Length: 151
Image 1 (cartoon, rainbow, N blue to C red):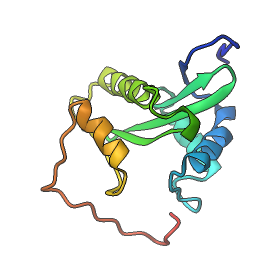
Image 2: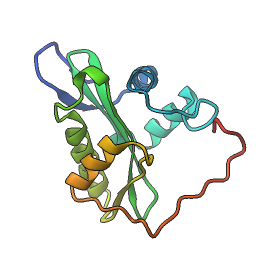
Image 3: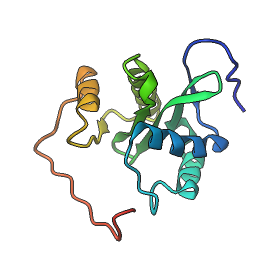
Image 4: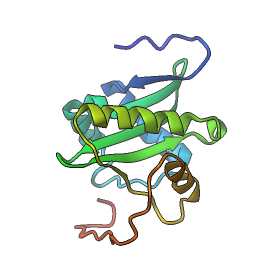
């Protein structure tokens, strides 16, 4: 268990298993699209956190979770996934701090290529990552084959 305290300021901390339901609520509050029938089930997120706890990072003010990022590591590239901040705490540098912490965790795993998938209409996230040195690889198209729309 971590010590979140009640002091002021934002603390970036590894997420605990009991934080996973809060992550789902934060994504909803932040307007982040989810896949409740697949990758975003409580069971799947809990399993993934157990496998890579260093890549599940939350931003907290006291006990309140105000941001989250989940990274993944495919063995060759590191991925920044599911970065979200609650609306009333946006534009305060929290997303940039979460991004930097996720990058640190991926680099500590030996990843020298770090990527982020961002929906085309998410201009704020595009500006964030471009400002941190990411470039759009527009020569790559993303394709998905899904068993259902919610997975």
